[in-house]
Length: 289
Image (tube, rainbow, N blue to C red; front, side, top):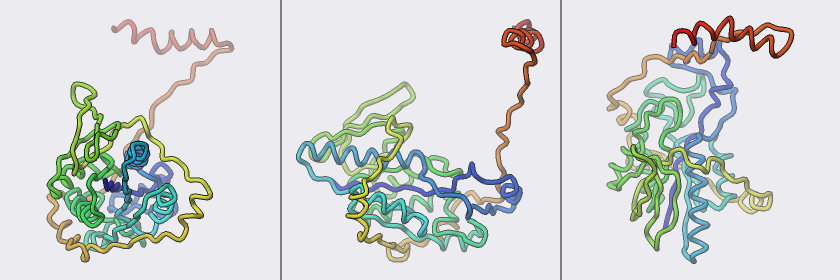
């Protein structure tokens, strides 16, 4: 079985300064100085792929793992880590043409994946092309990644590949040579079903949320492994045209104010503070209930 995992490397938006967001109205946010992190759902998908490989190996079945990202060289440290963990193939797709067409991305450094943040159909087209190139029987994706993802990319990719799609996946187990027992969350609660490959699985709030850490020996063994650089034109993908067909166009960005009001309960002792909190703030609210 061949499993490919697509992941996204995103800036740590929590580390941005208020002055950076002040310029977001122009659609440009400078994120060059903040670290890059793995999206939470994508990290779960990568670890689930490793656990599935281990479970199949215990049954005497072979599994080939591949990982790819639509990004520039900022994804290389993550890809090298995945190679050390046992991903035989690692690739990154350069879609910088989308940034040039839309003017999106980091100021002065648009990045190889910029311009696709708010283009789910175009992103899915690139992902589907990567999955075909890697020969994936199973395509694992996070159910959403990044601030502009609306959760539709796995469904678009599955449609383009002609594969069934299961979303909100929380666990994956082997079921025979070409089957998987997939646990996912539906409207009425958790569901467990057997899925035949090929398929697309979109990982949601999985219990497994952290990627394992490779040993130093593993890193040394994989240090010479090559990262494949893919170009959209080589895979018959016109990124600029795909972005141009998107029905929604980004016009501006604005931060969400998550600040919350607070009060300080005055008093010399904890009991006095509790009394002040009740008398000054809670009594009136409770009276209205």
